[in-house]
Length: 281
Length: 249
Image (cartoon, rainbow over all chains, first blue to last red):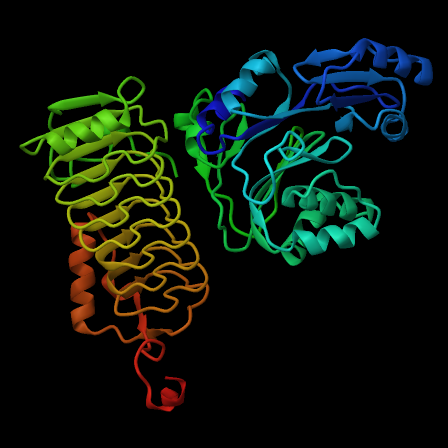
């Protein structure tokens, strides 16, 4: 992932972020990725969490982020955190997802977060060139769209302001004026209504106006959708050992055996999904 | 759509099966040399040269802006605008291409052994682009006289606003083929998902069969009967003056 991000650092030079899916936890416990814009007593937070929920891991600190493992349901901890610590940003929640992101060059990000040492079953990364909202850590991708779900986006949406107001009335909360966060909120809302991920992505074709190639990370895989006119690039590659999507082949070129991989472009307006157990299109 | 078989796998320098490969005079390894060094050298050479480029790694603008009859083989997958603005040179890519291969080509040949992404041959004024695999959306957009032969299929909006030249597709064409077409000719052997505004099917006359036969031969495509293709062109209702529209002027 570190190598892939570095390849695309000139394409998106202003911010960077990743979601790693690793070390899945058993049901009844959760993993939170928490970001603090200023120095914070992570150990103290861990003690508070343990006192409140009975069990909490020591913080696994990575630059401005820390990962906590807690013996409680994610929703419960999320609620507690937003009430007790509104100064902290919850980047992701789930049983395997970890999200790290920051404004600044992707090369610095890879170094500061020591990405090269992170492993996992799958991961999504993003390098950003901001178009629709300011450059900030909150405005960086991936955006969490629910438990163990996240979204990265290449493109720009033109109806995000109206859609944000509609979704806010439905109870979806937003941290920024970013267009992609609206797409993430839209997916959260559709999933909450009971749609499958494939259905939720399919309805993006109706409700989102603009240009997009989306990649959505899930607990056991990922999904891809391009807008109906395929305005933004995407290339996929697959070998016996891995499957990858990127905006450009040069990001995939750093993977082992990329030269010999089967390569194709995802068709516009079609939902592709992959999981660790099964591959389906 | 596997890559071509490397330097020796796909015939000679110009992609012609009859021509034996010749040893390169210059070699570049893009895991060491920069694209800028490669391109500057090719621009500076006084005489045409045979050039081998290894480890392209999806880098952009490889062999762009050539202005001499170099014979360039690129052994792998390339990024955006490969062989863009090509003049005189013969470039063979033993792999896939990202957006805009041979965009704005003026003359020469560009052969892609794998598949090409969007806007292949965009705005080409001359020369021949051959894609052995598929080409995706907007192949030959704004074509201005160049010739394109795609052995597989093309994506949506291909030949959009194409003004002159020719697009040949041995497979299928995506939606809105030839939208807002001017005077370019389109030949498709397979299915056309839909025709764009002002694009219609036209009669295949002897001159078209002859043009197609010649193009397929130059593209190194064998045992394909020109009679299997349909021809599409402009209905000329969109861009020509029409007296009924006088009130709009």
